[in-house]
Length: 400
Image (cartoon, rainbow, N blue to C red; front, side):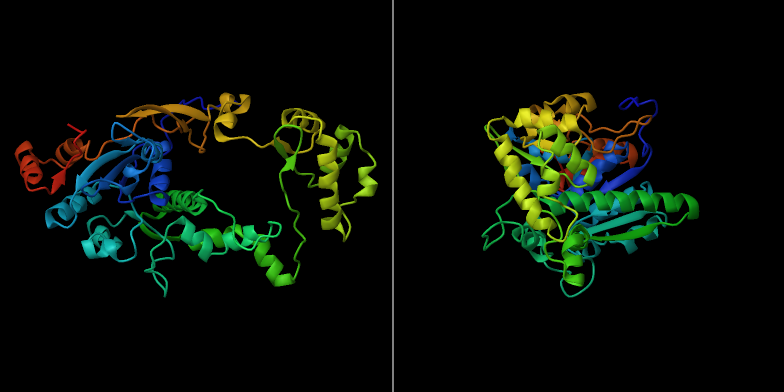
């Protein structure tokens, strides 16, 4: 199978999305829609998305923002002004999807909740994304990924796998944000498919906590059936140079590992299909480390992978993207914004015949005001100029 022939336009070509989102979870969701060919119109408040301030910045542009918002169009509106709200409602009449990740109630207060857009367009798919859901005792709590990791049990789950740990390990990867964005993308595409069959729109409610709960299957089953320790611990192993992770999960994997390392006796010395599985597995890891002590992580990876057992040396992201498999899949690509070019991860949503890729540009604040408000909604130059004069419509200083 060839990688991305791009015979046809993206699967969501012709779908128009109103993007009210900011920071990561919502913008990543809508970025994935753009990867699949949707026209995503990002509505930014004066000053733009908070993520535009995140380092690294070059010539006033944040590469972090640009990777998560590539391929979108930006208009800048002051939604506190009724004229801006009216423009959005007119845009809703010509759109298929709206996505927002404000606290519950904020969009409704603007007059831009699902009920408001639905009156203008009964077929619209409206996706709400929040930390705790649109209703309930915690629904109005502020939430970013680290808060969700703590609240929903992820930090505690990770802590249980650390030796002599009295606190969760430090971390800055916003798993909850990206996982929530993916779930939002799935719900939106499902709702669009449903609309094709029924002609009906849909309101979606994605909570970051629900996403994390679904990732903690092992922890739930340990609670349900008192099976603490049944799951193996996949710690990185040390060698002469670097580290690696090996995963002899199945009996065949274990046999392949023993054969490739030249230690067939491990099969009987550390049996894994017995009640003492966890204890034997820990002993096995120490034996593997002893075997690898005079080898580099690259050598270990080559030896064990050639035998068929899953293994990988611990890589950094740039090292991984420079590898032959990532190069073959075009997993790392160069995109640009007004600050210049930079390396970004390509879309994980791959299709062979239809185009699916991260787009190679990111918008400035309000860069597409004229195209959307003038070209799509039909405002005259004089009307647009008046709205700009009144600061209802704004643009970034870079977007002239």
